Length: 58
Image (cartoon, rainbow, N blue to C red; front, top):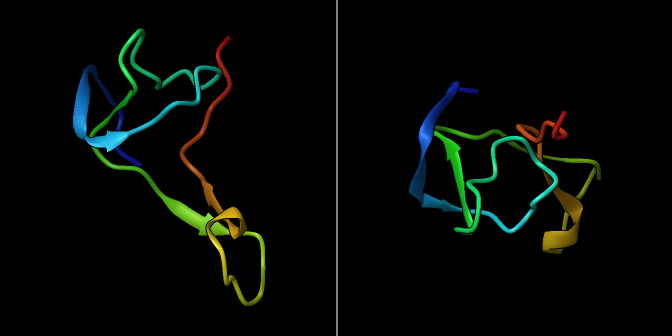
């Protein structure tokens, strides 16, 4: 995962306001790159995937 650049990244949309990388009132991530993973052995729907770059706001 790349560190936050302090600006919205228009290539990464995000609506998770509880994440420290969520960019304020805009629904974007402020990271240059995120890591996506899964918690399932055989993911078949988007609910099976996770943003592994998520960090809770402090």
